[in-house]
Image 1 (cartoon, rainbow, N blue to C red):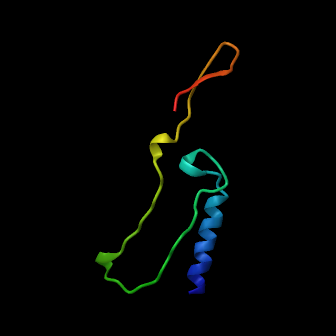
Image 2 (cartoon, rainbow, N blue to C red):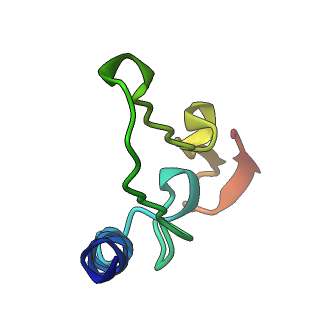
Length: 75
């Protein structure tokens, strides 16, 4: 369906303009793809799947020396 194709492309384009990037570290690519389909189903069998990578590594930390240089990466 052309409407669903346009919606898929719009979602990917919009999400990739947010600057979230892989695992929330920032970047140009947040979504690789979106798949939307129209099928006849009972309401009890509707599903949504979201793959969101590992959120445990969204932080970055460093130990700095007196001059402000990075001594050690914490994450």
